[in-house]
Image 1 (cartoon, rainbow, N blue to C red):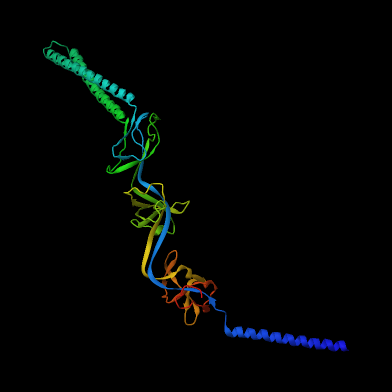
Image 2: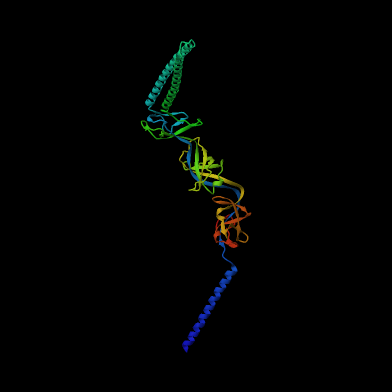
Length: 392
């Protein structure tokens, strides 16, 4: 009986303790509901009014404005090479000489054949004169009934044959004169000059491919000639940027060879099509290079400005968030200490800032901590005394 009473007393004590614990938990929950959710600490920055630029950066390579290979038009042994890498040449500069002995002999032979042809022409003309006088004599005798009709026909035939020989000799003269001119031209090809259209200006020898004594075929490259007074920065733009590229656009070119220095250029050509395998289009930017600081083959970065907005409504790029499939920002209210989600329509977007076209924003936007916020959420704002942009 005593054990029963002890059990009853223990149950009563445990029930009393459980009741008190439950009351304490409910009281704490009530206080939490009455006091609201804990404010979210955030960092805020002001909406600014300033200019913003839409600038894209592309990578590319420098190329010479013009480049060609100087090569012989005839085969032969390279007797002299008169230029080296880095030499300056002008239009018409002699750069190499081939062994010309064979071509000189061809000229002498062609001249001799032309002399033979001229002698043959003189002989044919002399024979024509004789045949002409004989024909005239037979005609006079025929009038006197001394010569027969057959003799007249024979004299006329000899005269016609003499005329044909003169025509053949004259044609041979033209043929042999042309052969002489051809031989002289081939001889002139043994002296190799560089030439180009618009002959003003200077160019440089960029490469040598052979040495003296080499046996060359026609069109074997001897040297490479480049024009670097103006160079081209060749870049490739993706489909998204293709409509923004326009002829005459200014560009800033940077290279690791000259850190911090910008070279000015402009877009001079844009391919009308994109390469199917890369979906990119070739763009050429022309840069003056009078000082010859830039060299073909350099890796470059090109910055091209697509648009600019003055006195734009600008926010930090970090302020942008998405809620319910909408892009917007959380505007911070200093009085209520709450954040309000505001959908925005963007204009120019740069690496660290974005232009807000609509709506008009005022005050502060949340730049850190916004991923924890919902519309109307309580926030812990920075202290107002010069600590803007820092977490309290």
